[in-house]
Image 1 (cartoon, rainbow, N blue to C red):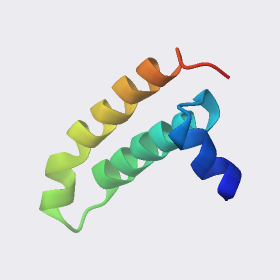
Image 2: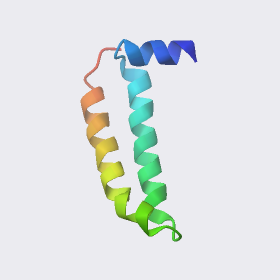
Image 3: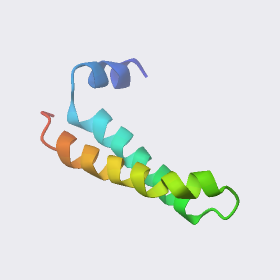
Image 4: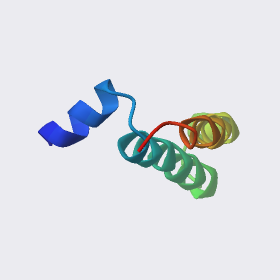
Length: 62
């Protein structure tokens, strides 16, 4: 856990790609759930933010 936090603070690729992937996964789950209209409404934005974040952090150093 300490290495993960350290990687986030030092702007390393691995931890930030994991955060971006979690944003994408949460956005897809929000898109597919049938219960909350608010979650469905924000699902595209969350998925888009995760995708753009992944593109940006893929240029971070290892």
